[in-house]
Image 1 (cartoon, each protein chain N blue to C red):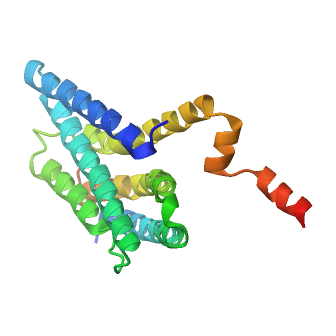
Image 2: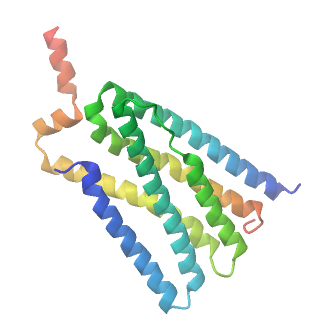
Image 3: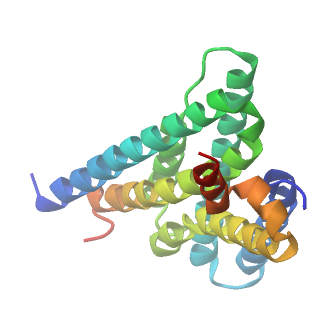
Length: 75
Length: 149
């Protein structure tokens, strides 16, 4: 097994793991907020959307890089 | 001022159309076909991911408000979309430039952050301190409750 394959695997795995934890925490807070105060959904929606966007940008990039490393296009 | 989603949606759609038209024209009219195609593919995937996230969050909000069981955010779909793009770049390396593809995957997220930041900056400049306190909350409320106690 070459090191590039290992590197690609680690990139994809940790990117997905981090995004899963981050999204889970954010989304649970969003649900909690709506359940407690349904009229605040508009405010919560925008703020959660930007936070989820920030959290998701990293794994998307890491997955794309990981795939390219895995198939030997980079590295 | 309008709510965030109502205000931001036309701006996002306009920016997406301008982006796609620009790179579409570059792909059509110039010899830089591979970089432009990479940018188009990455941008399209990124914009689809943003729209999918918005759509899923809207559905979850509606379900919670109606008292139904909450649904998931379907992150696997977004990850698989990126995987599809990466496989396209791998399968057709002469048609898609991987560097521009990876860079343009950030386009939708950056656009989202930019538009939302502009919204909050405008809101800060246009609303009065009292209105701001009502919508965002402030320390004065806790001070009031402390005095009250």
